[in-house]
Image 1 (cartoon, rainbow, N blue to C red):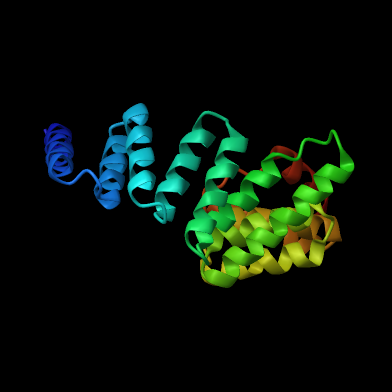
Image 2: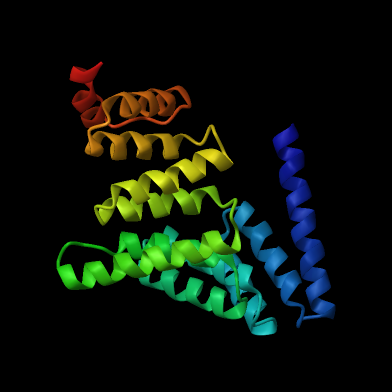
Length: 219
């Protein structure tokens, strides 16, 4: 019954927004709110059109570009996701979510085919993730993604520092503990690796069997 009521409320809200747009088609925020509501109903095609309408009406609506990037990511269109998040940070200076998303996507685009190209993407990812943190020092996901980037670059101390910052912001963020287990293992600091491995699992993050197996002799 509650789910049915929730669906009815969502439909009513969508209809209300559509009625508002009939009287004011140039309101980017209303187009954006409609897109969010449509995404809640998994009507992604209609949501995407509403987001395009939103940025056409309000070119500085950075959140709409981020959602467009998210829809691209859902289709595994990494280049599209990257493009829209670049639009987001151009639309609003200091938009930390856009910088973090750019960093995340660049890491996904590293494919091992061209070492020089991969290094360039890695360095650019780190640059953008650091910008995300400058603009939002409490952005826990940006810290952990930055920690991954440093790990990929072989900078273990920097990776540990970034993930410790994440834990400082949110002590029970399991991915940060998992990342710390990996970095401490690579540094040969096995007690700390075990501590963070166990903490990650306790918090519900499934630690890779290979990592647990590597740590087993040191327990």
